[in-house]
Image 1 (cartoon, rainbow, N blue to C red):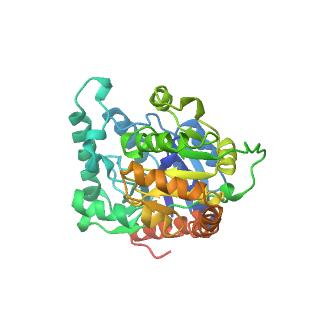
Image 2 (cartoon, helix red, strand yellow):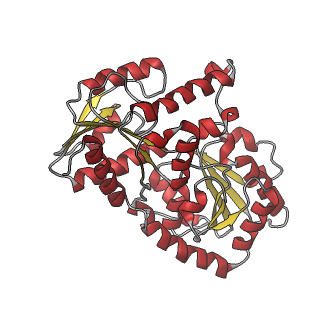
Image 3 (cartoon, one colour):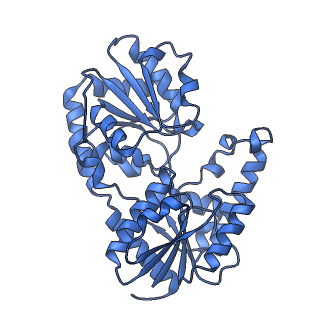
Length: 362
């Protein structure tokens, strides 16, 4: 079996983690298969005996990017082509397998960016909807990373005519290993990891932190991610206790997990919620909003609070920070929960999707 994969977004956090975890595990499990990855030079890191690399320019969603992807895909000499997000090539005569991580562009069109920073969000929304709605028409099979995302595909994309395989992401064992160097601060620390898009709920966490910080002079907040995060905290009443390290390496993030007293995921919507599982694997208690796919992913191993509720979020964080037995119980449950999500299992089931798409048995 020859599998080609669009790896243009391998340097992104979410989709990039998915590509690296999946291809690494699949190439180890299926040594008789050959995988061709199309993407930037960094994708060459995945090359091994049965993995080859083909440069492909354009890592975005625009027409020029799709044209470049389509040309590279047609030259890939594969039996099946895997799109790890909803951007699909045109003009292929081999089966497509497409992974959809979420349908946020359909659920919350008001969160879409303005094209070039000035044009109406409606333009971005319409373009994203066009690309998403194309998936059920051109894909042989669709992979949804959660049952919640599968429901969105059916409800929002009229995707009930295409086979949908629900295949959870994995969590690397890297996160459960002790960090190379850790310098515990000795004070309580709330950790958040994400991007400043509105659905991530950073505004809710900042308000909840303000409620908690006024009664606890030792409490700190660390916000990991890129973009406009720093600008959102400049006017915060406790900004001097908020750390914004920006983009960090995985090794640095593992140290931050190790030093955290609690990890918070206050999102209004998630198609999966991988950072919560990483925190669990690292032994950090998790407080999260009961929104989107989060309850499906964390199960009873996190303290769930109502979504979009600052008071409930603050109470949940206080319950973990102020009660060591609660925190310990969540750590134990979280480590066990994280063990159930492996890239090996994700790869096994994804390879089965490739076979089904090509109507092969092995």
